[in-house]
Image (cartoon, rainbow, N blue to C red):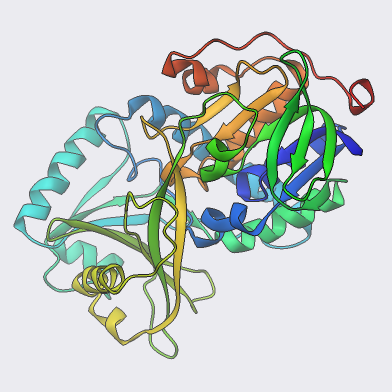
Length: 388
């Protein structure tokens, strides 16, 4: 049996960033990484969109998204310093557009909502939209330019975070956690599916859509929400310069260019299909159709990849952060469509809770207790030596 002060379950962006922060705090950290725990982190388009991702019913989540968005510049700089490589951050604005009259009415309603919330979004005519993004279809009726919504190449970020974590002393364990072990309602470690046991005084559950499948933990209302995503290669053709989100004949699509210009990400379907990993003809058709409606030249790009990932959904579409009824178990899951955006704030508040036992006020609305479950006890971190 090996041990650590903290075992972080899940090697995606959230888990790796949290492990890095914990190691920076001087703790001995083991990060359990399995290929499936990378699914959402590698498939995502990487939008950092607190404004254009907001909805009329998610005002509490908006505050968390904004708090994380404000941390992104400093977070990215720290990642670069710690890893010696790029962070993947792209600081260009997002252009949200409408394809027809009905889409434009919907966009105007959304713009009115943003204005009431005090969120910056410049209304543009169709001509002004095409001045910002010349590849837009001439049929685009109008749009919004949102300066605070950026993007990040999530694959580049994951590589950089992995390097930063390793350099800070995080130990990577390959495998899948079957069960969180406990004694007298207190975490003692984890057991992997191959029988390996890791002793720990604290465990962070950051394995996304698989959080509810780990044995030995309280009921965590997380489910997989399937998303199909395309990665296109413009080749010698020009690619879009801005991230474009579109209301396209009643549908929604986003087109996200990478900094190097050799990849354009198009997404994403939203499907309640469990862990179905099929790329379907219908899903690919819908994404290509909607992208072509907004950026006609995208029909000439090569299809480089078709991907499936699973967003960790919750009943209110917001993450689950902080303590639960099992002392020593900290939750960092359920980020749904905002996982990349929420990586900095989740890592910060989770590491702070593990080390101090105090949940940052920005995370309090997202504790598991909001689902009317038993409140978690006050707790302090134990080292691996106290439970081995």
